[in-house]
Length: 99
Image (cartoon, rainbow, N blue to C red):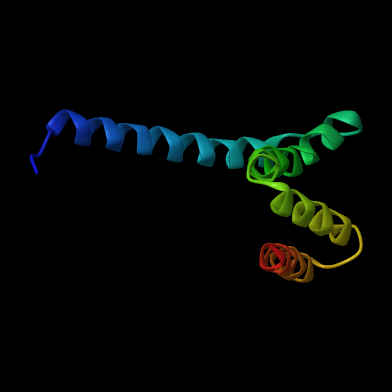
């Protein structure tokens, strides 16, 4: 295995940029004075990102995972997060065991 300085510098640079953009977001978000629709839009960002990350894998992997994601989504309307996760994992295990 060879050591490539350009690759190491690129990785470190990308890591620094990623870290600083996340930290800057925290500092800027703390200083914003939002109200009304702007606050509602800002509060909707985390669930939207979560759905954008989960939906492709839940819909592209098979019917078992899609059904388990639907079970977890329904559970999330009534149950706490830990119970929702346990139910979703249990649903995937049960559905995979069926076939």
